[in-house]
Structure formats: structure tokens, C-alpha cells
Image 1: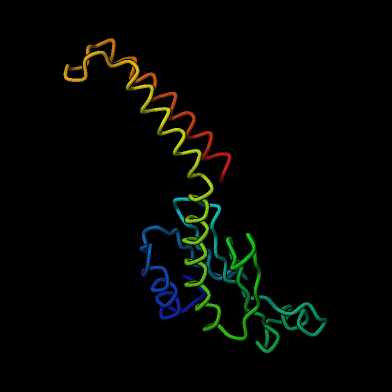
Image 2: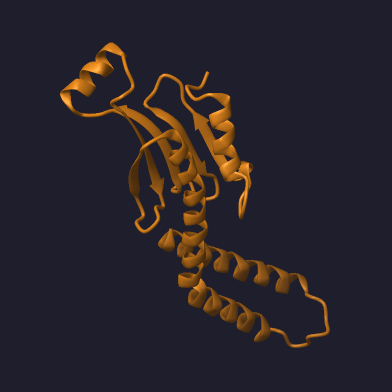
Length: 175
């Protein structure tokens, strides 16, 4: 059973189910008996994560409370966001759980922003790749109105495989 109440889990899930994405775009784990209360991973690019944690402060009194499992006045609620608002990795402490939950929506927007800007960086390379692809098709067509012969189909598949390899290389380079 998760440490968080169902109502808190539902509030977190609602933050994921609006805007550009839906709940199914994320892998959500709600931990029990751990300082990590929730871990959310964006399935399409698992490098994007959100972690909700609750820890005791590092002062001696806080450590003593942790050892005896008493009190909550020295507990610190924090979130880790990849990507953050302006950095790739951000850790933030929050005064209460409500503010931590609100930061889930901001994290989702950070993903949208990062993906949008990543696409802009790749745009010239993708345009060049598309133009090369179109040129490679056009240069080998003798009669544009005829159907493909078997050897032409095989040659086209080979070229598509090469293009696919280049796209994969570009993705690795930029992610």
C-alpha cells in the first residue's frame, strides 16, 4: 500500500491528465515505507522524471526524530524535476504537500517546453535529411507514372533503412 492517501495520489494523477499528455504517457509509482513517496517517469523519454520525497532535516534533532519515528515538524517535502524550470535537474523544497503537488503541472510543462525546443534544434538536420531523401527518390525515377519493379522496391527499402539509421543516430545525439 502506498504511503500517500488516495486523494493525494488522485490529485497528482490529475496534474498529469491535462494539456499535452494523458496519464498513460507516464509511469507512476507510489512507494510505501520509503522517503520517496512518488516517482513519475515520462514513458516516451524516461530521462524525464519527477520525484516527490519526504525526509527529515539534517540537523541533529531531525535525525533523532527520524530514529524514533516521532513528530513531523522537521520533515521536509521536496521534489526533483528533470527537466526543471530553467535547469535540466532541479531540486526544490516545499512548505507543504499542496505546493509540491502543484509543481507536477509545472514539470509537465517543462517537458513540453524541452521537447519543443529540442525539435527546433533538430529542425535543420531533419530538413536536410528530408531533402536528401526526396532527391534520392527523384534521381532514380525514369518514368514517374509507372509502378515500382521488385528491384526498385528493394533499393527503396535499403535507402529507407539507411535513413532510419541516420535518424536514430540524430536522436541519440540530441537526447
